[in-house]
Length: 241
Image (cartoon, rainbow, N blue to C red; front, side, top):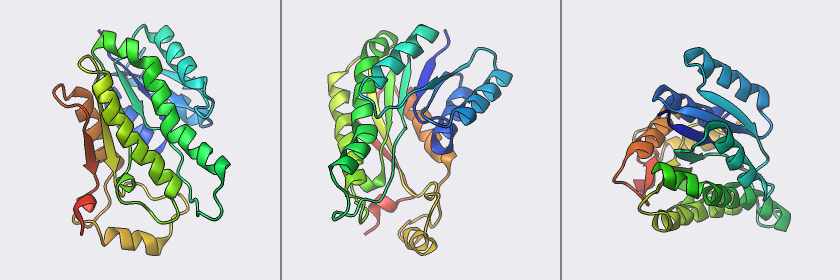
């Protein structure tokens, strides 16, 4: 029977890489996007060229509280089951303390923390039935905060806590783990000086790749005796003194 994976934020960057590697591993992929519909449709078309009947596209704004349950219901209605939930969709923005208000806090927390919780809640029954798994995308900044990004870092730290709590709540039927990427893709408006400073703190002295993160997700998707863990894919940055 074909395994089904729902990947949020799957139309581009890391999400698309995760979707590609899961698809190559035999999963059918439910591709979620919010605005990048054309990219999601193009990726689904590539999957269909490789294997007919192996993809679907689902548009939802996960900032809306009801969207998570609607998305999961739509995916299960389409595929009849769900084996893997990958919570990749996130927002990353600078939030200096003096400038970031309650609206900024809610905007980031709603996407980065509340949505994964609501998606897991909505998917729990289907995942239990399938003996499935959840993989959350967190960040090395959850433990080593980035200056002027307090809300983002807090959201990812909360997602680490949620990962471990859900691993207990959903055991033994559903495994819940997380991947914590380091320097993989620079922000689209990146600063060269800051990037050099980050590289100087990476023992492997280089950036990682989207494929590195996707490989970690695929490992955790199939690691049947691993739950409640956070796998750092950061070139050793988390051990840098």
